[in-house]
Image (tube, rainbow, N blue to C red; front, side, top):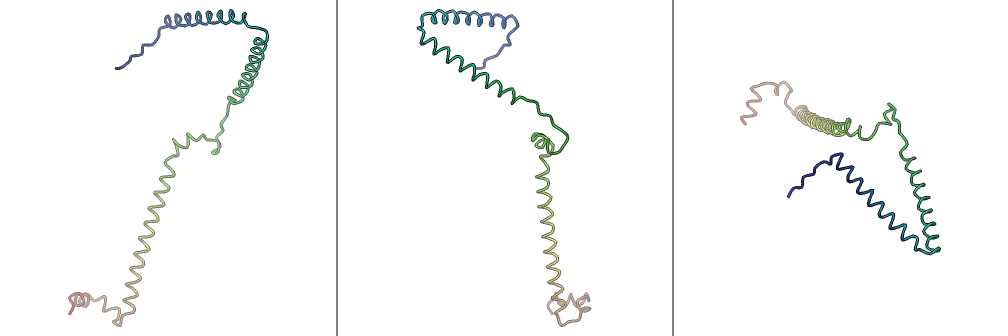
Length: 147
């Protein structure tokens, strides 16, 4: 079952704020009435606890102010935010890896091809037949036919 959320109108918001203020006033009155019945030791302890809480809150506010100090970025490459690297240059590392992988594969295939040609050259040069015999199409056909 879906619940539809209807935006509050300014009139509804003001009415809600008025109800919250009335509730806060009632709570304050009950606390005030209850505090009048407490003895002096309990009131002293509550006052001390309140002062400690206010001091702690003040220290936390000071830390928050320091943490919210503005940070200015220059145009230096080292000051660029990490999100910019992810959005703008996030494709460079995979592209470089792909480039070097393809380059390495090409170099390996070229080295294999050179080794095969060197082996063929070594066989031709170590053979007893003269070099021009291998260039003769009739001789090559005769070797292939097995005669």
